[in-house]
Length: 100
Image (cartoon, rainbow, N blue to C red):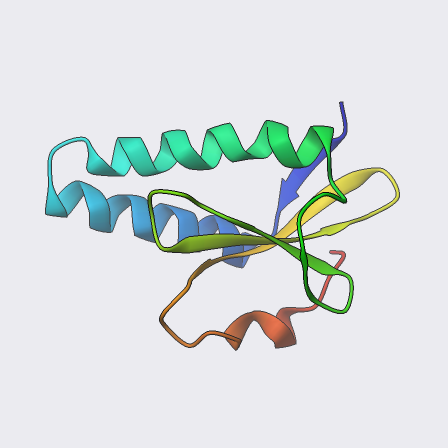
C-alpha cells in the first residue's frame, strides 16, 4: 500500500484540532483522530477518487468534523498538505504547495 506523508504544518493542524476537541468534550479529540485514521486507507487504496480541490491537490472531506484532508499524489507516496477547517481561512494552504 502506498505510504502517506504529512507535511509538518498538516501534522500540527491535526494535533491542534485533536487538542481542541478534547477540551470540548471527553474523548471527542480521540474520535477526531479515529476519523482521520479511517480516512487514510481510503486515500491509499483509491488516491485519485477524491475530487480535485485545485491543480493536482485533492480533498477528502471528513463526515463528522468540519475538516478536509488536502493531499497530492506523488510517485511513491501521498503527501498530506493540510488538514484544513472548512470554515476558517478556506484557501490558506495554497502557498504551502505540494511535494516535500
